[in-house]
Length: 99
Image (cartoon, rainbow, N blue to C red; front, side):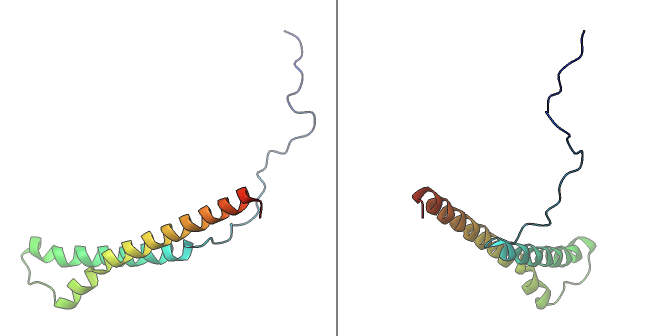
């Protein structure tokens, strides 16, 4: 076996270039807020269900109202995803139309 020709015709860096984090797209902030609100609601839901399994007194009504934030967070995140989808479709249509 003889010497093999190099695959690349020049020097190649073994480091990945870092350009920083990409800018937030439309809907990204809404998705992040939705995830946070969902997690708060999920923790409240676990806190309101736990007394039933532990045989303790139920929590006050405010805890149950906070657990409804789980659905609100899901709706916020879904709205952010839909906003991102519409922005991407609009951009794709603009690029294909040549505007």
